Image (cartoon, rainbow, N blue to C red; front, side, top):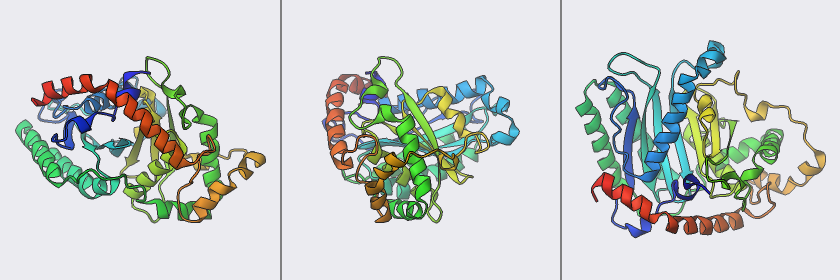
Length: 359
């Protein structure tokens, strides 16, 4: 298994009970810098890794002219997304927007990302997302590096002052609206389950196939509808909670939510550079999986009737379509495996954290 699958968003925070539970970073392009800005706040291993994967993937799409070759009718003109990347107990929440450097070059975006520990999604939606939006607005309005750095420092301190004591995950945000929608459109949900069975078996509960090698682990992505009547952030959480009920909970799940659109993208596993094509891809280029007219196997579909009954009752599926086991049992087993990985990564994380943060 590679270091990403063992240690990303799986750090030994219990050994540092007094360490803050929120860290804010910024990177990308800004007019105060003549090139890529000096990375700000990259003091945790997961933030360093996220910067490598996210910005490296975006850079590859830009340098290969992937969006230009797709055509203007198939790509959005700008970056404008919320991201939410999580594993049990930890998450990264961020905003991405189109920006430029001091020389006027505007191909690359700017990103602000907060690494939060033991904070439920309801807190992230209530506290982190508005704080990031306000910080992004301040960054857009200035050409001063000092102002950008001060904004990030002030925002980080404000968030730290409002973090909650260690609390259990919030699994319900957006779920009622999600279940209500798919209770009325069961064919759409069956298409999604069919897609999981055909494309995400490597991520089934109990499987390490997605990260069995020493190099980059596997990834898979899917485009999904936002839920009518729900807030975009509620749709994002409901989809992540659904995927966690179906896949192995050790697998990191990244949600990409566009500011202007009725869809969202999910990337599971370790994202490859090509996965970030979706950041500007319109549905004319990357369709929603619910719009794909799959031929559904009648016998397999019958086996999912119990799962569909859960949805009709207003809740997430209690069983995974990939291994037929209870989602709660799968989550408990995954938590134990993550804990075993965590003990083996302690030295590397603390060395980097202390050297970067001066602790």
